Length: 280
Figure 1 (spheres, rainbow, N blue to C red):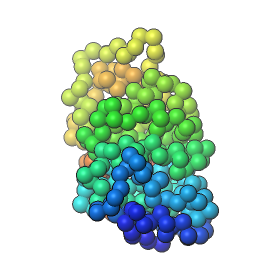
Figure 2 (tube, rainbow, N blue to C red):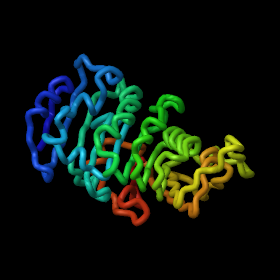
Figure 3 (cartoon, helix red, strand yellow):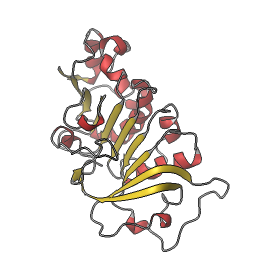
Figure 4 (cartoon, helix red, strand yellow):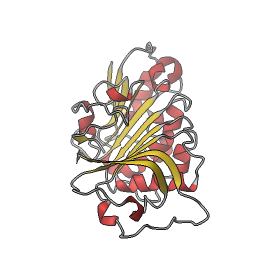
């Protein structure tokens, strides 16, 4: 089912739907000329009805979510979900696209991140991807502790670009009870090598040990060498049993590519990225 309405009208329309769990729903919410502010009305919560557990059951039952934020031709902000992370890019159970919120993208992205735990039952969410284009978010523009606090069952976390990744990793380091069952952290860090120091950096706070994570995957764009992780700011805050480095053509979180590209599934991230073109 496809729904394309202004953001002010779409919630009323969706309130009167009653769809089975197996239905697919693709929502386009247009904000141009609407009297809408993300800080006051919310982003996805201003679109989805309050009775969504009965009208749109496929949303709340999702075990995998993928968010994109970036200036592209087809849209600025999108969220998709489903029960299979490997099909999120090609065949999600549902998706929400705000194609024309580019002028409000920083504010909208910050609000959208904090809404995620209200959209999906935290007990069911095990795979979360946040693809945020460079310089959309400032280092201090997101309360990452608030974003992650309720997500106790996430085992696979994918985040890009560097500013978003560094903010999220800092939260995991400072609040080590966040994402308690995290097994894999995948980071898209095209700018990482330029930040690398010759020797290991000390932990930011000598009273807090590095956050232990079973496996960390570093995705780089045009670098020929694997970075010296211990010499990076991010590497000073995490410790992994294994680091894996991958080279890819990074499409910088293009929303348009979510319905075009069909990445191959990965054993490490259950379909989050392919060895070729990725979205991060």
